[in-house]
Amino acid sequence: MSKSIVEVTQGKLRSAFYPRLRELDRVSEWHSWKGYTAANALYDASLEYFAIRNSTAVFDLTPMIKYRITGPDALVFLDRLVTRDMHKVKAGRVAYAAWCDDQGQVLDDGTIFHLREGEYRLCSQERHLSWLQPSAIGMEVSIQEETAEIAALAVQGPTSFSVLENIGIPGLDGLKPFGLMHTQFQGAELMISRTGFTGDLGYELWIAEENAIALWDALFEAGKLHGIRAIGTDALEMARIEAGFLTAGVDFMPAMETVRSGRSRSPLELGLEWLVDFKKPNFNGRRALAEESRRGSTWRLVKLDIEGNKPAHHSYIYAKVRGRRKNVGF
Image (cartoon, rainbow, N blue to C red; front, side):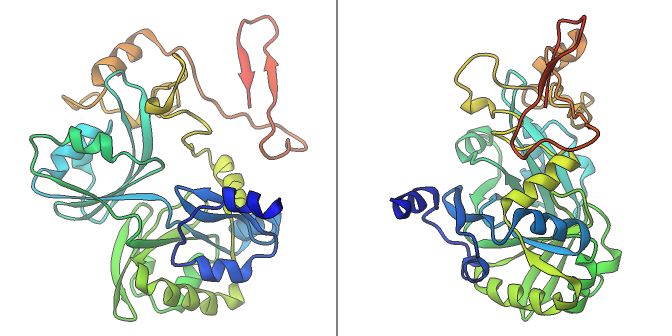
């Protein structure tokens, strides 16, 4: 009976780092992430969270959806797609972005990497090829999913710089937040971005699948004296909640997946108004968002800091503000 449950909850795909994760696993807590087998925890989620905040934590990002967007109209396409001004994102920079349907409701949020002139990588929480390709009609742009081809690791924590420096990455000290650089690792192209989902010092490493294990082994050899530890999604979830980062399907429902009316959310309702540039003449959902900005939003996602003992992971606190007809939730 337990075996059948494991088979259902695990994905059928394996990332290039899966053999190393399986070797480290002590608790057999796995789940399916976009068809890939991913670890909830490998030892103990609390200890893994401790690594994020006090040493170096390594998380397998490979299942995150990745699209390569290239061509003469790549910038025009992305600027039309997302709510922020992509002309301001120069080559070698990364931008957090959200994109909406025509009603101004968020389809997803993610990061856009300006790799080189006319070449971008869009990383998202959900698959959107069926939305992206029709949106590019009439433009000279190519959109290809490259999730399986690119292995990715998040290397996060206060000692993460020292670990990467120990494996011989040149020029890392000049990499600013939301910057990216291209370098070589054992003859293979390695891209490093100073990005992450933890709110701590951290980097994300992107390399071809066939070079993934060599990169993993080099990291863990270099990190022996820096408390390096592989982590699962439970620890990452704790860190991202503390940092105030959003997750589709948890903090909001992607507009294309909502069943009932009123379940989708706009970027203004999610506290992402700083991502909406109304100076742009045109982007998906602009008219609806401009009207919402004028009249005010119906909902507002907020973060509450509660003193004392924190509630258990995945628990909820609901309260009604006395004397007001407003519900408060955490």
